[in-house]
Length: 125
Ligand SMILES: CC(C)(COP(=O)(O)OP(=O)(O)OC[C@H]1O[C@@H](n2cnc3c(N)ncnc32)[C@H](O)[C@@H]1OP(=O)(O)O)[C@@H](O)C(=O)NCCC(=O)NCCS
Figure (cartoon, rainbow, N blue to C red):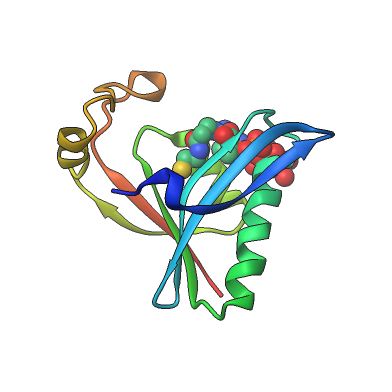
């Protein structure tokens, strides 16, 4: 569980208009991407925000950048693998516990796929 207001991040802007946000946390040589949202698909916003975090993680001498996404988010799984992340673990049925802490997590996600598992991806630096 993360308190979003306490996380560091980068905002992507188009002129003065915010068009994307990435948040992350660094702990013991690991940099976790906690959230990534691009408001204009397919314009390079998501990949440039990831690049900003990779550059920072390299500067801070992290050994890896990692994140989890849910099993239904096939678009994000495509996106992350296309830009170099590798699948490293499937955490089965962990969303049940997350849902107890955050009841707004829906039962059905993208394409009406049941939201059940967390898929962990990483880039080693
Ligand atoms: C996933 C997300 C961050 C991608 O952002 P984006 O700004 O569209 O990404 P980019 O434009 O940088 O795309 C980089 C590459 O990934 C591909 N890509 C992006 N989204 C994709 C998708 N849903 N399916 C397949 N490929 C995708 C792009 O086509 C592009 O490929 P190219 O270099 O060959 O053109 C965005 O769709 C989003 O905010 N989704 C909702 C929130 C979310 O799921 N966040 C991640 C969960 S942890």
